[in-house]
Length: 184
Image 1 (cartoon, rainbow, N blue to C red):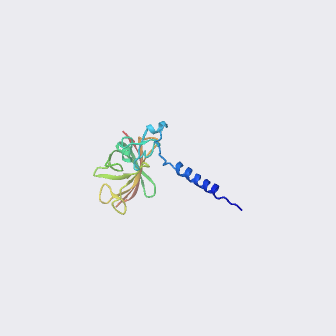
Image 2 (cartoon, rainbow, N blue to C red):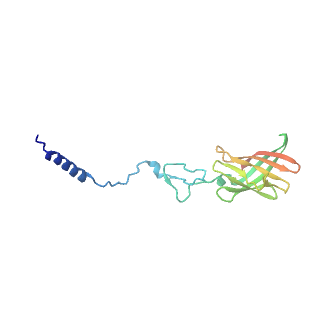
Image 3 (cartoon, rainbow, N blue to C red):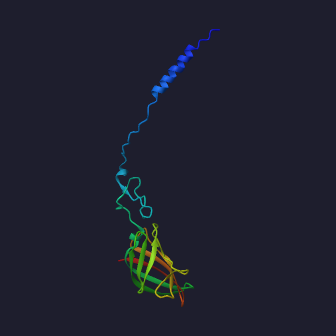
């Protein structure tokens, strides 16, 4: 039985040479962006109202395309306030001039609800702003016996309107304030 190992060795040697010479380090070439959407800037700040709008694109590092919750609310408004008692019985309407001032991207103050106080609020990117609570029943309102809790929200369809819903606790009872403010 003449078993010849040379052809087998030759095949193994040939396979080894092919494998070694065919191993070349891969080099990645940069791709070319042909999609025109990459030419537009988008806001890449999570607390912004327009976070990731216009994505895909290029993140705006200058922060020029972002707008924030406080930007949506700030301005001067004419507010029609409907006041109800704890039993939801309508008591009266009042019209007030309100001024909403932004402190930073999410903090703002409402002036004009009462003459002696600025009311602090914290807004989120869903255009909802909660009255900042400084106590168990809310924040102090016009006098030390009054506390306010509640929220306001801006309409996505009409940027000139803000809806308010407040609960006011007082030494004379609990009252609910609901109304709409229209930007002037």
